[in-house]
Image (cartoon, rainbow, N blue to C red; front, side, top):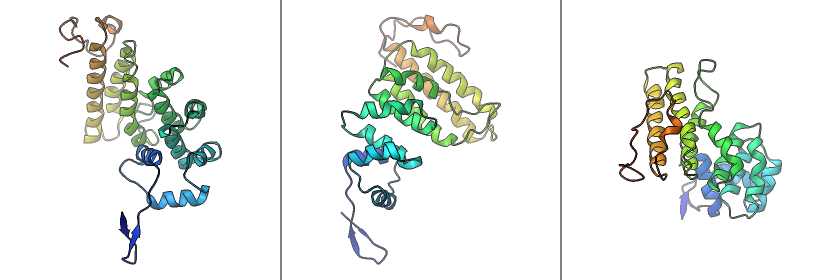
Length: 230
């Protein structure tokens, strides 16, 4: 495949390894910064797995975030061992990305980090606009999806608390009643639908463990659903 250069001539498009493509998509979404990747390759001397292992150890800021994503997307047998230390990183973005990848592998040590992530960096009375709030909002849906992999009924409590926190956060947004604030309420509705589906997939009824929640309680009779019809 080719692309036009600034002089109008066709130039071959760079082909990147599949694990790097997936890592870039995780970090950048649809935006795929080819020029930045070329600069990365020039800076670090390559874009192979060994290079990203070195970036993980020696890099910083966005280079290290990309390394976490690429290691997480790679088939390296030591990926789990390489990512585990970042669960305690002082950089919250490093902690979040590593927890998502380790959570996808159902690494038990990632579970408490993921649960914390459900309610981290949402607006509050003390901090109405958390730093990089949009970045954390973007990945919060991934947190929900990752936690669902456990299919653990005890996580209902965490989801209900997250829902309550999400709904409560709306009042602290500077643009309360705006579409942005409404988005927080809709996010809460998404969460409640996801944990409802999770609960109904368990064997038996699990609503008794969340009876004291401040969020309106679901139906007491789960037998009609029991994993189907949601």
